[in-house]
Length: 253
Ligand code: FPP
Image (cartoon, rainbow, N blue to C red; front, side):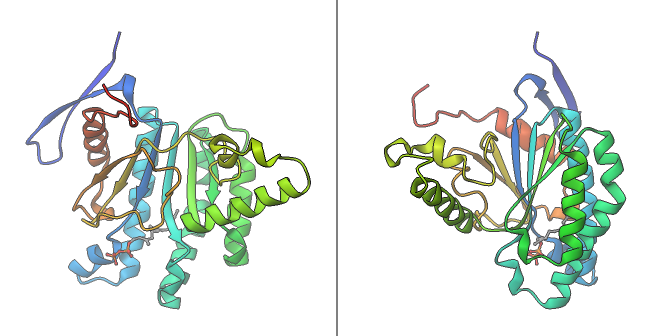
């Protein structure tokens, strides 16, 4: 029998019913609007990022509670290096603080931490903290929490092509064997399902180099809410809307 979860939206204007049997397996989130949130409050951008980390905490717990299997957040893109040095440093140190503070709880909840992206360009301390977190949680059996760090979708595809090329050269893979399934094994998301839904906050409606290969058939959900104001009921509303979309994957119903 199908299970349902009833809840009210935060402004209490709408009562919504979630079908717990069709929770998306994989949710991708482009967290946007930290800077604008801070500006509107007369605060420095760093305060927006700090508040954004609180939202990550809330969303991770909610995804776990709802039974989402994969959560991928776009924490730092390969283009974010263009930001002022101070801001880049703030983001890196927030990541370190987040892992130091949350890792035990995350581990207790059986979450597996993974990363998507090229970590080699990150500060040494960050890399160590992330690698330790990945190592500690690698045998967990719960939600997979992908943190996209120094990630760019086009870079990911080029990286995959280079690795595949080496395997073709060495004879491990034959050219005629290459198909979508083989190619996907060379992406950072190897072995994971594609995102069912991609959420972007702050009113922007673009992908910004986030999971371009994997999002071919994802449902997109946009909201004007800035990331620090995104709450668990916003997530539930996104999932509710997702459940009311018709996914055809190029076919007919
Ligand atoms: C977008 O807001 C947010 C980011 C580019 C960074 C998100 C990263 C964090 C919240 C912290 C680090 C990550 C972890 C996992 C702890 P924006 O700065 O682009 O906002 P704006 O468009 O309003 O200026």
